[in-house]
Length: 558
Picture 1 (cartoon, helix red, strand yellow):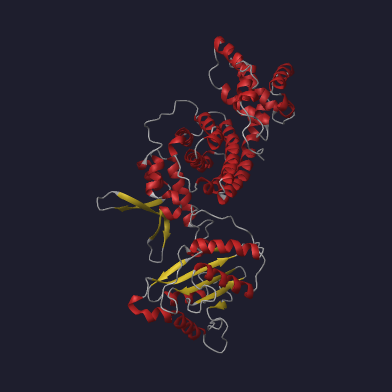
Picture 2 (cartoon, rainbow, N blue to C red):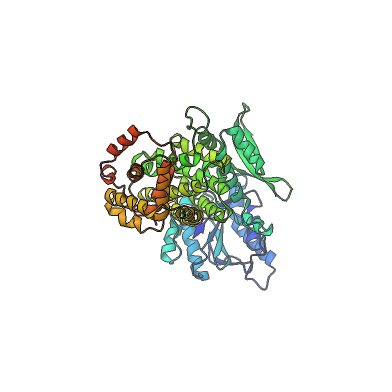
């Protein structure tokens, strides 16, 4: 159940609100508007007064609601109307008018608008428009002339909504922490529907601004990318002339006066205000850290592969910074992906966006390498590799997102945990679409049976607890192929396999052969070591990998 508070101001605020509630709606969606509850139980109902003109009853209702406000004259508050739509989920059972009436009374009591048994409380009405929602409208002056005590009413209403969900066996939403992005309003949804658009301007802008932040190396490039994607920027300047904030508008999105509809960055998402954007961009400027030349797919994969370690061993600020950088990587990856997997990657990015913010302040500096390598990929996605780069990056991203779920769960970040879980589903679908043809191509180049027996023998000796899983894995032929390719490039197959095994435990890998394939592919692309280095590697990997790298606690990735 989703309640949302909207405040109205001006001498005509009550008339406008009641006129909307009993009108046809912006898209003729108000079929049978009628009262289900009111402050006194017998307020005039414009929707159910067949012997009187609806406008006459409407004017009477407005006058009664406004009476306490009018009594204050010039001392009336700036905001005089409290409007709270309350919507049930599509899968929820249809509630009766009486049930909605009880819900309305609980909401106004929780908000401080009309505490239970307070006969001098604010005047209010609850109007039902459809099976799944009501609108509560109240005037913000009590009948005794005082102001209502509604401190933190949004939080109080949300808490009450969670209790209502339990009592009425409705879909139970996750409690939030105030860091979620603002949802589009009904007006924005109706406008998008009227224009034949799949998404609201707010959602489109949020995605484009996020992608510009992820792709830009500095503030100049950030604004250039926005302009290139049809986003107009209006800066808020301080007395010194410095930019203090910025508003964004989508090209072609105008109001009834043909003016652009601007959204403040902070209303698109809490981390999209100009100060927050500048803090993130500061971590991608050329100094003081420079990413070494090399294959950016490998660098991004290595950086993403380290995220589970950060989430289990680093402080919360560094861990939150890693999650923010992972979100930026997911924002850009759809732009580099083949068409069949693009939609699932976009859904994964949109879902994970919620998992990138919490009350923990992010240390963005800890994730410089991931940001810069993903930016290099975005600028030249075809410049490196044979298509396996995206598959190996997604393979480690799946594990990183699974650890993100665990990290948020242990800190009771319910919405973020649910977002990561939803993102994981979409990532798995995209990964299957991308990885299967690459693995099939590798499997077609599988080495001789003699070479495969040699690899299998060493594998069973090195990790006997995983040997059978690897050898029966559908990706075993692809793994054997990359081992053979590594040998052809001058590597020792046993040494590079030991290096891949020692990298991290296979306990959380859904497909151990697939995980090893990507690890060895990345290691094999490096220059082959000389004889002395190979001998040192053999001595170093003589200790069983599992003895040197204990398992990190996490349920197996689905």
